Length: 415
Image 1 (cartoon, rainbow, N blue to C red):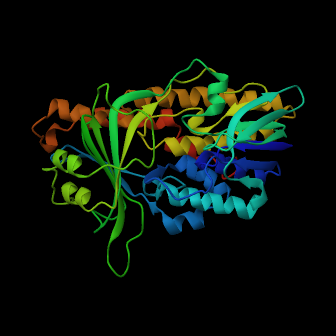
Image 2 (image 1 turned 120 degrees about the vertical axis):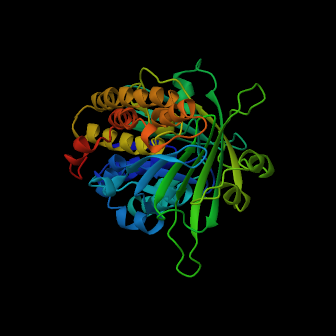
Image 3 (image 1 turned 180 degrees about the vertical axis):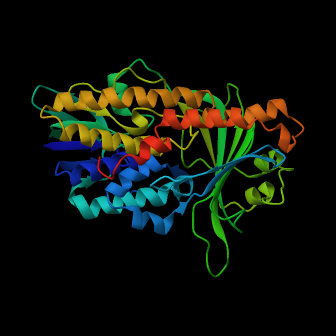
């Protein structure tokens, strides 16, 4: 069976590795001419790390990632109201990884070259359109910059893993329109600095009106004692003039952001100084798309951000793309009919990811930030923290996202 994957991001590359491990003939086509380690930090949750363990990638990932030990929530004054253990520190069989998105993609890319062959990975090939009949599906690729035709490729299956602005999704849903802007803009950066807290903690600070997310994505340098810290400033900025096109590489000047976070200085973290010393700062409008009723049309199906772009809340973007890869491979392994396999994948993943997209629009687990800000705008005492209410919100989200500990720990390392 020959399978074509349009898109060489995290979802497309993990899918290629899963399929290749199960002896499917796979080719990956990526729009850009050269895969570069772009972006900033992401988190990969235990249920997705289980899939990476299946692929034998954990030893290499551990070299470039942090095993997240704790997730803390604080108000804008730095007062902590929740400390949540993560990954293996919470009793999961698998860790939660905090990692540089670009370094992770580069690792997956190099692993694909080693396992499926460089000749089966094609850079500079942008999916333009596809058509199919009862026997095969044919994808048309062009040069993205010039529009020049490159070639057509026929296979048994075409997977559209071509991101939030997916060409393949648009062909299936031509009337869908642009992405849906949340009204929030993310300002993302990395800073080489002294570790904060225990060096493996993720912190959520503030409220959804003005938030700062901070976590390490690199090991402490033995010579300098410094660590690469990823941070994301989230500002509510509704208005007609806000950009809505997501771009990993749109840089801004730091002065605007420094003004917003002038007083965010705590005994455990100086947010202002962290922003001031940033390597670069990128503007990223927080956008998604409405969940679809189906991703699958005959021999074609969607995967990853092309299928279910979601707000980066709850660390689920990359994780759900990895789960897509596992579900698709398992469906192909357990069905003789390609069409039945793709429908099985569709029936499992469409509702599962749709719930997360909708829950993230309701702020997901970060709803507890607003709960505390609304009730205690001037701060709180330890006795005032509504622990039961907060825990209920967190547990509900873990169940919706598919990584409640009891369910996950019952699974093995197979698909």
